[in-house]
Structure formats: structure tokens, C-alpha cells
Image (cartoon, rainbow, N blue to C red; front, side, top):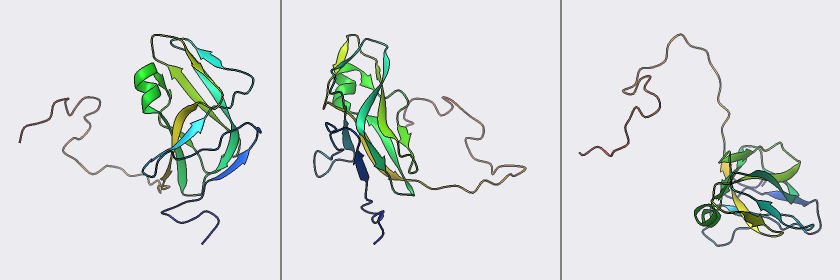
Length: 159
């Protein structure tokens, strides 16, 4: 087996950049995402409503080629406090080796403090494919055609 692991269980290599950093970790056997923690040993970062901040993790990762790390909000922070990932899902590319930093936005109504060691988001390791780009004169027709935003409606059609 290669250093990258198998398709079923790719290997995520993690480099600690700050001694106080917490490694990404699955919290349960069935968790889809690894929880990512803030590395703020100097003290908390307070997010006022509407603020967008970038939070360090104190670690760098090596995601295997053929995979990406999808950064997503943690459901509890999002639904209870409005703390979300502004570009969700954010993508960590397999060739990025810098510190993993997490963009967060406070969509809530109150200030919220991000503290050292707080689990602030989750990262799902997902396979990706590189497409071959080919220019064509026309595209195959579909039922939807060129219908864009909202063109399929918002209600479930009754069968």
C-alpha cells in the first residue's frame, strides 16, 4: 500500500506547527468529518455579529492526491450560535502544505468567543476527479435546458 493509504482509508498526514495545537480527530466511529480545533494559546478571538475571522489551527496537513479536505461548519455552532464557514464548503487542496486556517463568520445576533482548543469546524476527506476539458459547438439537450436559478421550483411535485 502506498503512503497515501487506500481509497477506503486515505492517510492524512499532520504536522504540528505549534506545540499547543490539537490534531484533527473523528469524535465517533460514524463521524464523516474530522473536528478541527482552534489554536489560540495567546487568548480568545471575539467575533461580533457579521464578523469574518481567520482562525489558526497550529497544524499543516498533507491530503493524498485524488482527495480534498472539505471544510464545513459544525452543526451545533451553526444552529446555536450562527458560527459558520463563509465559503462552505471550503476546499483544502492536496498540494497545500501551509498552516490550516479556518475562515468563520458570525451570522448570529450576539458576540461569540472562539477559544483555544475549541472545535470550530469539521473536515471531510473526499475523492475528487480532474475532468478533461473539451470545447464543443453544442451541448446535449436536457429537459431543464438553460433554466437557471429557481427554474425547477421550490415545492415537491406530486406524483
